[in-house]
Image 1 (cartoon, rainbow, N blue to C red):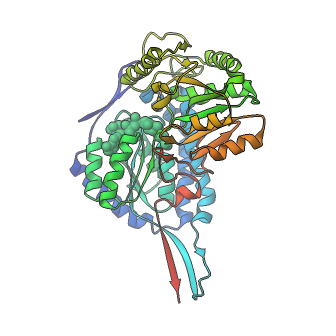
Image 2 (cartoon, rainbow, N blue to C red):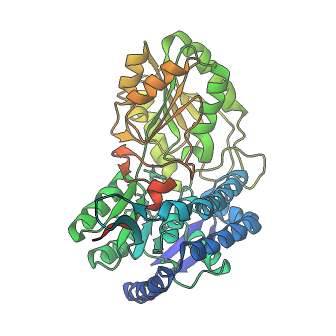
Image 3 (cartoon, rainbow, N blue to C red):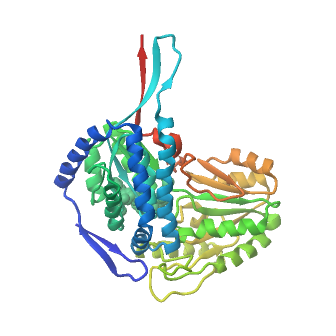
Length: 453
Ligand code: NDP
């Protein structure tokens, strides 16, 4: 099999790579296992020394990496650059905090000495998506590696160059070979690796389908796993909110990365008292976004990552119009590329696919509700539970609402963003486990009790 990296703007092939065979993977994972025994025996200070150098490499080469991201999946170049900078930040965070997070926790049990130690598990397989092709990898790998594990990566099939480039970052930073290794493999080979019990843990970021298949396999082999899956985040605007600020954040949250984010706001739930004002202000904000060539510094919205996504989005819009929607289409036409213009669906109803499935693209349905209770009920009415935003001039009211929303993250008067200092992950069908912060650092550790009598 050949992995093709296709530029979603020019529609041309960027790079092509042959996939690894299963036998190649066996040989690589054997070397990863050998690297584990050395890597896990280093002190935390030695390991974080390498992380600090990885951050330097990321910052030094950020323009080169940003261009690869934009060419492979169409993200506007300024957003790609920000993605690379964020990878450096997660390294900085664990350089500063990992030793404290991983130190033994002493407990008084009446014995001579009792404590909890956090020990690495071994080789962790990361299965990652294309939407943030560097960040998603760093988000799982840095904490796993910092805790003393080594990682192998099965990246999404459309971003093989990113997969290889990330491996090079670790090598350029001086990490021993095989602390991080990219395997260019399809999902079937990844599943074989799990079935044959060749790794010691799995971190998957992707769709519900992938999560369910991998969770089933991991269950069969009794292998620990973290699943970061999809979301359909509600963005609630109460009548006492600052409508201008809320509309600006709504446009950013929904249309960043052409709407292809798990924590993008995907359903806008607005109190009826302000729906007209909000719709007008939101439309104005969306029209300010420049659609076009993602290599252009001015561009805010590029193409979607793959050709077939345009068709998927068209179907969602068709379903909405059949059910009575009158969409507001923003932005201009582009001559080439896999474009879908930013679209607002005013007066959306809950039976529309735009409100019930995870829309991974630039479509924003607006749902009108009469009061706070209805807003919470609509917010909680999907199978997802990743993030949510609440906008209100009354912080007590907004915080009360935040507590009632079933999700892993709620931002009041702001956007949901992954932040190394905070746990990241979802409930319901949005996933199992947490990444980032001290919670993420310990996901792939043996939390071991040691009692000395
Ligand atoms: P997919 O689930 O299709 O793919 C994600 C990764 O899983 C890819 O590497 C893919 O490989 C692989 N994969 C898919 N099925 C299997 C399988 N059965 N066994 C092994 N590997 C498999 O998702 P997308 O790439 O389309 O990404 C979008 C999805 O990811 C959205 O639902 C989004 O919400 C979610 N996501 C969640 C995030 C979170 O942190 N919660 C963050 C970002 C995205 P291949 O490419 O070869 O098919």
